[in-house]
Length: 146
Image 1 (cartoon, rainbow, N blue to C red):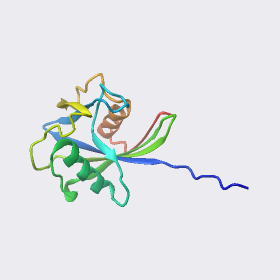
Image 2: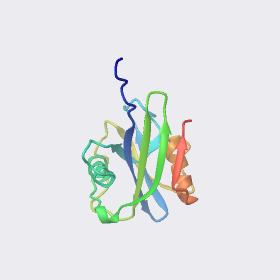
Image 3: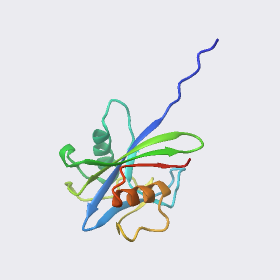
Image 4: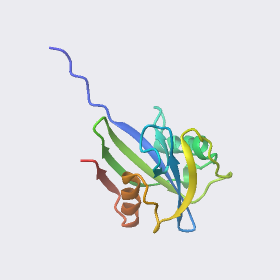
């Protein structure tokens, strides 16, 4: 009997940068997923790295900033279902970083902008909106797509 391939789940880390009651969002472009909608600085794990290491790498790659491990706090975990794959998303928050925020990936992002946590844009990824609402309500775990 052929051996059944094990289920594979994808893992991504997201950065919630907070400044003066606002959160930094980026507008996706040319990625093939939710282009034209706002999300957070984020990325897939590359293997042999922790969630904090992943988001530190992504913060520098996408926004040109440095974030310290000690300044990151896990604030939400989302189990997300899509028809083509499932994700575990880990959201980390900080209000401390060094460097100037710049769009380091203009081929994948056509806007980096601060939004009030009470005034998020209409064109925001559903999982991002739900996560930010859950964090505000102090809900640590969420699910979407089921």
